[in-house]
Amino acid sequence: RRFLLGSRDTAILDAILPKGWRTVAFPYAEESPPRPDLKGWGGRVYAFYMRVSEFDYPFRVEFLSTAGSPEEEADRISSLVGFLSSFGLGTSIPPVLVEADLRARLREEADWIQDRIVDRLGLGFLTRRDRRPL
Image 1 (cartoon, rainbow, N blue to C red):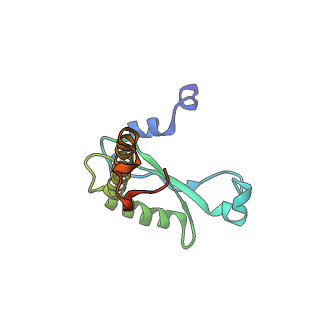
Image 2 (image 1 turned 90 degrees about the horizontal axis):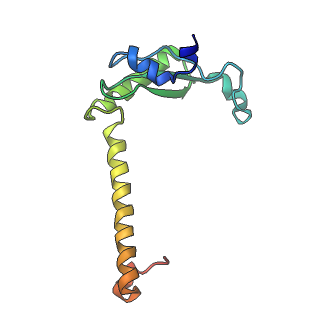
Image 3 (image 1 turned 180 degrees about the vertical axis):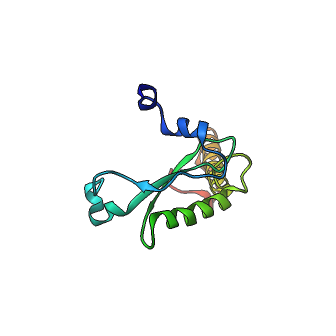
C-alpha cells in the first residue's frame, strides 16, 4: 500500500493500461465544487486516463459533463482523442498540436535570428516593413 501511495498515477497505469483503452470516468474531486470559482459546475467535472500509444504514458482527460452520463461522454471524447492521436508516430499528442508547436517554435527561432542580425548590423539593415518596436 505504501508503494502505491508514493507512486504517480501515470506510472502505475503505464504498467497496466493497454494501448487503446481508457479508465472509467471519475469525478474530478470528492468535494463539490473542487474550486470556489467553479461554483455550480464543480460536480459536473469528470476525468479519465487514456492510452493511445504503446510508447507513451497514458494521459489524463478532464471534461465537463453536460449531457448524458459521464461514461457516455467519456466514450465519445476518448473516441475523438483516439482518432486524432492515431495519426501520430508513437506519441499521444495529436499531429495537429505537434505541427502547431513546431510552427510556433520556428517563428520564435526566426525572431531570435533577426534579433541577432539587428544586434550586429543595426536597425538600418531592416526594411521599412520589418521595422517594429523591439
